[in-house]
Length: 278
Image 1 (cartoon, rainbow, N blue to C red):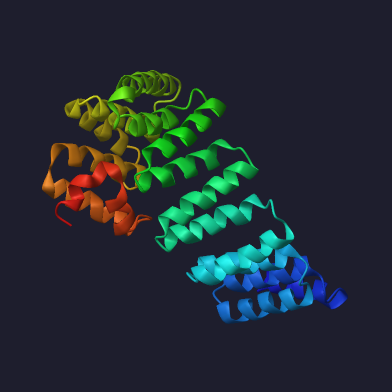
Image 2: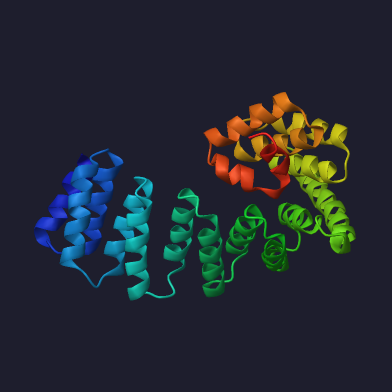
């Protein structure tokens, strides 16, 4: 309420200040008054129809409200005003992801990567293509990410995953796994409290077929993080390789409770086994 009071004081001085209007709408959204927030967002657009921030802030509000199609419409208006707006492209892709339109999400992430070469965007693009089974395109973008961060063991495992399906690249996949193991161990040597390092050591050994070692590293990882998406996903990958029905069901449900939809989970090429008995 204090924040609203301060913003409204500023608006008494400058009623058409777009930044203040957006801040006011955002504040109402944060305190749960979505009705008031939306009125202000719409009013801001009417007040400043050429200001891309008006559409962007409203689009973000719609995204967070689960109104994905409307959010995309407003982000597209942002792109008409600022054609190279990476934030808008990324969020359009996220909207498509929540709508379970994975193909459009992948293509939109790819557009964002063309505007702004960035390892995180390359990984998002690659992971989206991987999820829809296009492992060739996934590998292309994972390689771009590794070119920017050559010591990133997480990216190495992503690429190793994408390359393991083709006999012609299977050896390269194994080499990447061994490199990932070295870099993960190096991180542990400098800081042994990073759960991700143990999780990716587990995934590395799972890729090499050593499920005993994979589970040992997951036990270590779980001491630091047993409820995160990386933990659930890593456990599920191992459970699928073990064909352990009880653990598969447990971790699949845990992932669905987080950010994964059942459709996204079933589209993952590593979880083909799940499709045999949905």
